[in-house]
Image (cartoon, rainbow, N blue to C red):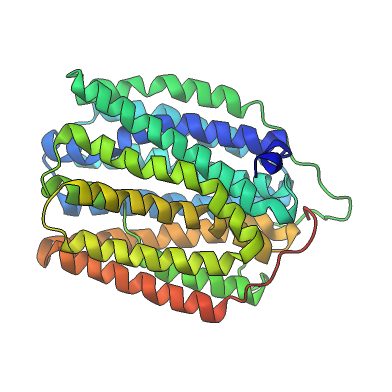
Length: 395
């Protein structure tokens, strides 16, 4: 695998490095938002569900728009640069808000930046690599992304241990934002095949292959059971994990995902995307059931969070590699847009419903509902999405 990594293009490595820097800032703040929400803004799980659901779902509309624009213009870099810049410079403003609607506005701006960059970035990555190495390339991207997610919580834990106020930690996120923007300006557009025509502005799903549309239905059902990860951190806090240890708990997820994203995603190049995804979905369902049943913190809880990192490693890169496999080259940006849109839109009901069940019934009921949705998605993935091998070549 090391030999294969050395042959990956400069664009693949640069996109991964940008994600590492961006997530070092994003994930430094991510575990702190539930704490900030409850201890400073005095809001609970319902507000958390509304904030995360609306921010992700609304931004997802831009993921489709930016994907369609990439197919139309054959230019991804401007959207990537602007998207990272907007998100990076929005995060420090969290330190200035005084209520949860203000936090919603900042998270919305952050997610809009992600919406503008995600589909163009994924399309650029897919266009820069041969089909038989898509799993490896997307896995490397996710590994570097999670490496940033590992650095971020460790920084947060160190700052909390040093009694740095939460507001000041948010302000420090401006430093990686500047570095990330500088790196994004160094990206180069992927060369276009002479036979690949420019596409009209066409967002319609019906023109994409039927197997891709069935895959989107699977993604929708899975996402309905995949509410915001902040509920996991909230659950850990309720089980007795100390405030200063919350970032370390999330760091264990990032550490496992960093180590295993590249080899597991690369494995899908050989054994097939669908087989690996089904296994990952089943593991997710078991993890969620365990999170509902566990009664207190301890090493078992840290072990569960590490297992969650293994699920992420086995699925995140593979899901996107499968999009590239199923979509025609000339509609790849639109396909990534629909994939990101579907996941984002269904995160709204997923997070809101999970929060409502969590408060009205019990944590176990909420986690069991999510697990049932994901098991259904695993079954449909096995039945509906044929494990066809990808076509040869980049396009």
